[in-house]
Amino acid sequence: MQTNDSLVIEELAFAYPDGNQALFGVNLKIKQGERVALLGPNGAGKTTLILHLNGILASGHGKVFVAGKLVDSTDKAALKQIRSKVGIVFQDPDDQLFMPTVGQDVAFGPYNMGLRDSELDKVVEDSLSLVGMLEYKDRPPHHLSFGQRRRVAVATVLAMKPEILVLDEPSSNLDPASRRELADILRSLNITMIMVTHDLPYANELCERALILSGGVIAADGKTSDLLKDSALLKKHRLELPVGFTL
Image (tube, rainbow, N blue to C red):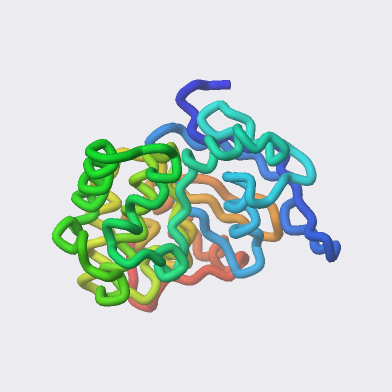
């Protein structure tokens, strides 16, 4: 396996206990530092795929490798290490922010991985600085705007120094200024990024490569702008550009 691959997926298939087959043999490689948009209609299997990256779901068939390590849900020690390498930023930041202050939220993961004292403080400050939220370190998260909370949620993940940053609908519910501020932050990060989104202009702005997952398989993989210019492809997979948007 190439050492510069952040993610390798081989023949990944998965069915839920009720018999619903969500993935039908996904093969995928993402190189270190790549930014990839994961597009597709609702029910395409995007969430199922993402939850395999850190072992929340165990594959029914196939293999997932993160930074060369096999994601094995039966190996608890290895799984803990894998989960520190795949940071998922959920669509609702309130799913990730639960401590009394912003700083404590960002410290939670590294603390549980064994960091203490000045080393922990540095990780918290560095992570908050990356998202422009250091001055809010001692604030309660619920006093922040939605956009600010999303940036703090990103910081909680960055504090774990992951190999892969996964963002679930990062632009949803953001006003235009917050949307632009988050885009600037994401552009500045030197990290492998997978962005699950229905916001096609945002995908085009931030990700050079895009995948279309549809019906549990990868239906298209290529340069984002090329895929978005293919109106027949978009229509087939229930994807739409905003009215008036041109590439």
